[in-house]
Image (cartoon, rainbow, N blue to C red):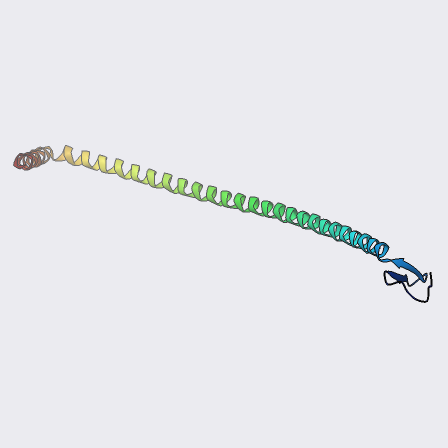
Length: 135
């Protein structure tokens, strides 16, 4: 074979100046492409792993933040509930004291004016009876 005139189906290898067939060149290109694809797949896998790790870290941060906020809200609600309970207790005691004072003053008035109270009760009862009878 004459190296001066190239074979139409052969290509010269630039380093060795040896003709290389199209089939072997295609095999080399196929190997190179497969290697590039493998490297690209590995790079994609590495990126996916990094993203997964970052997402996991963010999820843990969010979980911690949400837990802190829930605890703060719970503590605030507990404090408010305690304040309301104390205020309600105070109002109850005040109302109870007023009711006792009213009862004592009513009892004292009835003891001082028994005739007025009996006649007043009779009048109210008569009025209620007449109103109930009309219906």
